[in-house]
Image (tube, rainbow, N blue to C red; front, side, top):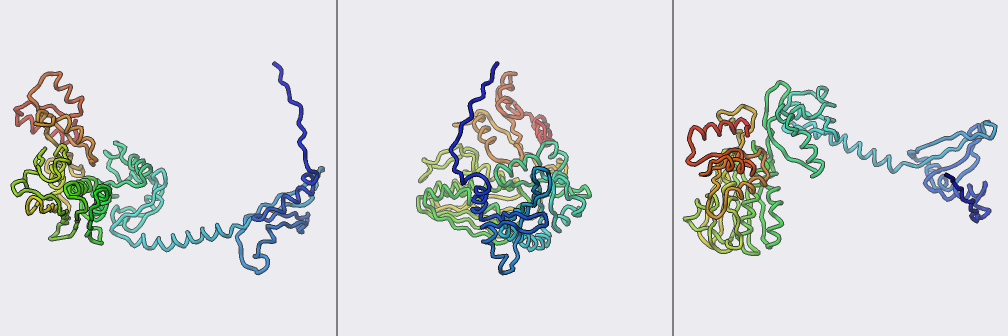
Length: 436
């Protein structure tokens, strides 16, 4: 193998671009650096525009500089002088100082908050800051947690399930993540991370806003300035209110008025979604909450669906110890949905371990009119829920192949009609323990 080296190509070079004169021209055009030569004793031998443009040398004002000094030696290694390169970093320094002062002002504010644990994490989830609220809620002093991973506060079950890592991944991909559940204090006791219902209401309205804007509706929000904290699943509550607002938008003519009002009343948080849309017949005010119920009326035909939205809304309300009611003066006279939730924490469900959030349990008949149980299950699995519901299929078919098909479809159990009471109790107990 032979390697041929190409003949060197001579490029035309202006005489003034080489040697000392070329270097002088290069240095002189640099304005944001001071580049100059010093002799062996430190005396300045050369100067450039960068230094001459600095007014700091004339009026005595301070500047923040980055300085690099390099020794120059001749061919025999003898010290011939130095090159000193100085860069003005005053602007960057001012920004850094402003940021530091802002953090110093913000720190007392954060430290004074005692009803919220406000914690800063690094990209790996290690705790970088701690406030008095975190001390009051968890029982840990700052020195006991700084540098440790935030999974310290999660239950062993959540850690084993990878929930802390999942939260970080969601926060990275979506820029924020909202979660609630049982957390551990220093003494081993557990507390339930509460939510701000004001935030729930605002997020619900924001999620429903595109549909309302598309239909040119007028949305009025009347929510408290305070957080209105309560125990609950914020993802489900957002879904509940968003569903009510979306229904109001669907069944209200273009340009209609929709209102969301939130208030605290007798220890409850009360949310009212009202509209001036097609309304509801008096005899249908309860029937609309039945599974697959769909009322005929102005605008209803164009908005067909599976008919499970209001059923789920009421279920979510009741899971939180609350209620959801509908009211209307009749067809064509608008509607009003009132959600009432208790602010005080609910006791753990009987038969469930303290500290374990309740698992939703559902029985789903596979042979229903108009829509089958498999379609409903697929829709349920798509809904954002804090915990995966335990869903049992009810059917008149009990062969081995039938059971295999329901389990492959995503059901957690297969019950044969008529369902035996003892079998049902056993299934519910198994579901409450997180079984599948």
